[in-house]
Image 1: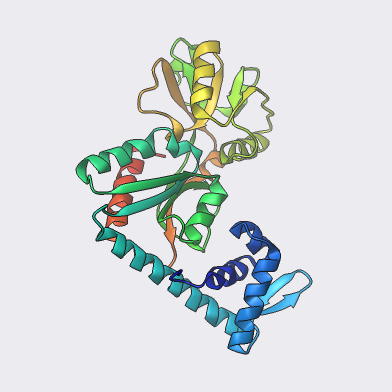
Image 2: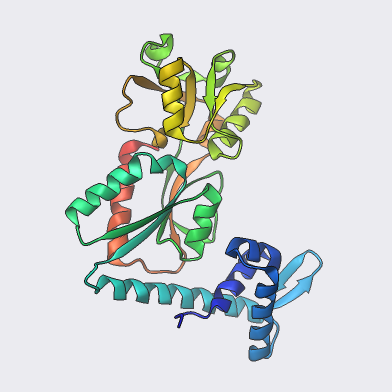
Length: 298
């Protein structure tokens, strides 16, 4: 028996998105399932929660009130489950979601160090795209989310945020290793290894290139950091990656900061669900992550 009626999650998703279809997409269910749950709740409550319009739905006064109740109920149920898990012989479990960059080195390193000092803690780490990470945090599926963002999201609580700069990565025998910074226009004509256009890295680069009036074409496109670094080592190409994606030891490679005002628009955020008190085990992991992020510098 679930602690929380699934309909509460459906209502909150519709309330957040303003659309039954968009809520269904985020919840990975059929739109008809969401509609049925809303109709059932409205029948039981005796009042509409949303006004149906051609462009979506708008919450009624009762809808606003019910959404706040749903948010509190889901948060309290999550806290209860966390407290129960903390008292099991298996020890507390911390669930995390992260986009690609921090997964390569920073997150595994921090979690391993935390496990060494707190051997009763268990971790579940999910890899997801930047937007999907935030959605998992909103839904309470992940205790903590670590993701890149180009804007603010009022539906999550930001525990920590810092700039997430881009870095040029070259081989140690490159003539650029003496440089302290590089500008994007200087990369024209170089064999570039870049992430795909689906990433915030590339979105940030495209914005900066447009502002600088330059067009950069890659010879190698890949979203897997380890593959990009291997390609640079073997071919002598140069890569543009987020600093937080890089391992502590670059092994024959050199990282050079990229300059440009547009490149400062992206932030790396550690997120938690709004209104949910974090269990002590999650708070301790969050503190370790924040300390590591500050040391890494984004």
